[in-house]
Image (cartoon, rainbow, N blue to C red; front, side, top):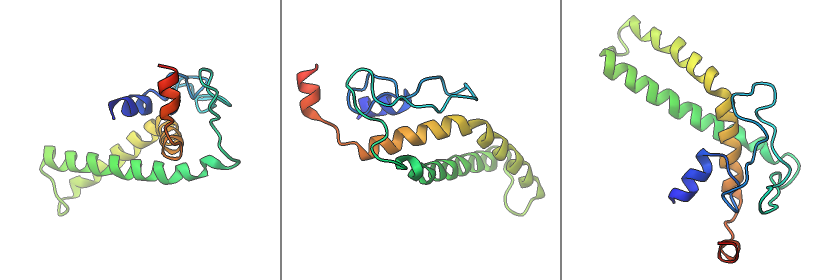
Length: 130
């Protein structure tokens, strides 16, 4: 479980957990989302079929809603403001700015989660290559 979490957070191949899935770092705005065609270590393809990553919008949406709920709850608990106060409107621009700044990372993370979800871990590969 911890190996899978590390693989997700470091954007590594879901099969060997060693090869990089992206060509550049996430903060590279122009080409940060360019993926390799296949893993350099084990040869696992990163695009299983044409249009494979269209479903990452669902993952990104779930992550965005989760982050918004966390920031909203934190804002209410820290400031003590509720729905009746107009000061709650300060949370909204902060949340929008945070989500816009996190978007490059969220796009990449959504792709890694999507690929990992559809990839069945190969125990035979790990036994022969460990």
